[in-house]
Amino acid sequence: MTKFDVINPSTGEVIKTYAFTEEAEIHHKIERAYEAYLSWREVDAHERSRLLWQWSALIKENRDALAELITLEGGKPYQEALGEVDYAVGYVDWYAEEAKRIYGRTIPANSPDKKLLVDQFPVGVVGAITPWNFPAAMITRKMAPALAAGCTIVCKPATQTPMTTIRLVELAHEAGIPEDAISYILASGKTAGKIFTEHELIHKVTFTGSTPVGKKLIEQSAASVKNVTMELGGLAPLIVHKDADIEHAVEQTIKTKFRNAGQTCICANRIYVHEDIAEAYEKQLIEQVHALKVGDGMDKDVKIGPLINQKGVDKVLNHIQDAVEHGGQLSRELDDIQELGGNFLKPVVITNVNHDMKCMHEETFGPVAPVMRYSDIDEAIHLANDTEFGLASYFFTNDYRTGLYIYNNLHYGVVGWNDGAPSAPHAPFGGVKESGYGREGGIEGIEPYLETKYLSIGTKTE
Image (cartoon, rainbow, N blue to C red; front, top):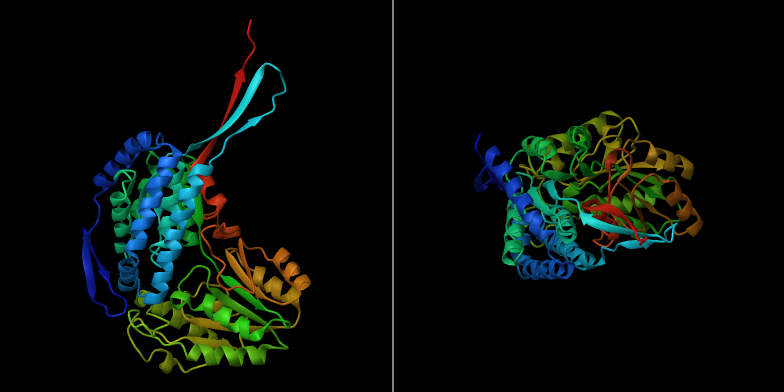
């Protein structure tokens, strides 16, 4: 297969057909990226910063058009897509500043005849692989720090949503960033992963996606000990304790659970509610979830768009049916959930949930909110941690002692306390356990693109 179609998940229509990048051309792009790296690394930090700011300005000028691309190829509601563009450009802005904050240091020597220096140098050419659910934000938080650090980057967007990345790269070139310093390829994840991890001129691989694929890339990268950053799967728990503000907890649950129709790696996948407030919480949650309008993302009133494809629909339906078989109670009938057809599913709350259900052990990636009751906070924390994943978690309590206790005992890289939307360009994002390693965003996000070099100078003169 030499071509692939980009399909609008709302309508099933082909938006555009692209040719896959030939393997020889991928190798050629990497070689050109390396040639560009030799000169880009010499560009001073203030000039790199200026070019990133110019890129940012162009992204902001094209905000509406980029959001429309995100909605067309990914189905995300347009208002959410606008928010993603803002989030994506936030990384460019942040790392335009961080480019000027790459500091070295001196170390007091243990001898009067020595001078000890530490510097940071760019790691080299970066190979980046990103998913379809955030086609703007997932790539700018790799592109921007790489370029700020003095690296060059070759990007492989998801074939479901390549148009946004292509346009972002075009805008970078319009801003004056050299064409070979930032480029893209169109390939399968398997092809790109193999080439990126094996190519001697690729010095770093950064990946956002599933844990099984991440493990394979880590394994392949180990052969040449490549620098890797992995943002992998999540199975985010959300705990609502008995002293929580129920109205606020429901509002924030919806914010985290149903963003992009539940198709994000940090969506609340499992909800644990204290038995004392469970009935009130479930009632409010169901009322508000059923009020969410489902439809084409270009409709301004739509809050939940389509799932990305039929495979995604099938997985969600499998989780729902499995929950029912294990005693779960649906807030709306299965026929009602599927009423709109195509890739659309109406959101549903599942109550009477237990840990025998798939939705409590696997990422659902859909508009399903399973609610399980608990009686003791240590029980809830244990259930929340009882997984191989450790990306994001959430909890709601108005008692600072309880909050600090939960925070200190949740084994997750990102934690939201009374907050369903913790992500920010200026904050470190990443997981623990099998959710990966390395951080993106914040001052930590540029570190994976730098190597530390130490210099010891002998100063003794005869």
